[in-house]
Image 1 (cartoon, rainbow, N blue to C red):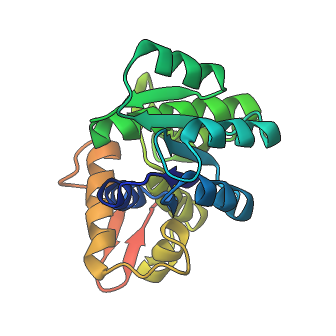
Image 2: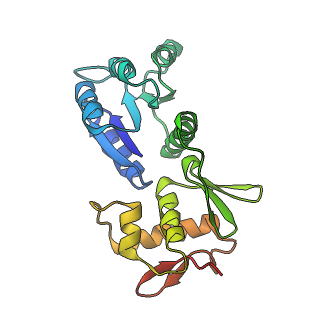
Length: 228
């Protein structure tokens, strides 16, 4: 999912880009409202995060312009303005949520996942396709998997890793293949990045992360999803 972030504070903007990129999102950053609108038309994002008080064009105006072209794209305001009237104005302009600064990155990630899941479900033209992975059923559109009655939350990058392994079940999936599937051809993370993501993913989906049965390491080559 591609996220457009419009924020005039360079430190906040870069911090959000770094944090959300690690979650598997493709980020497009704009320092003001006018550039944000240009990025929206050029880069076709799937999700928009807007500061309100920005130079050139404020977040309200950007939201209004985007809604003229697209009624469904998720838009969330991030603002230090915390008065009720500011929230009301933002929501009446068509925003899906309003998060007051300062906020925690964990809260923001949760809000993005919840809103994206709802919008994907509402706007989907395809049925909610799932795929099996061991004793799990993975739902890519919902960024989650189910083991019986237990729901397991996943990131977009984790879903992409599982999907790649599932497509090549019983085969060795090289590190390069997983990088391409989860990060894209233009991204070259260091070798430890993949291992760290696999380790975190195992803690979510494996019954015993210390003795993984779903994602097995093939030393020197990559990983394998073994189906008996």
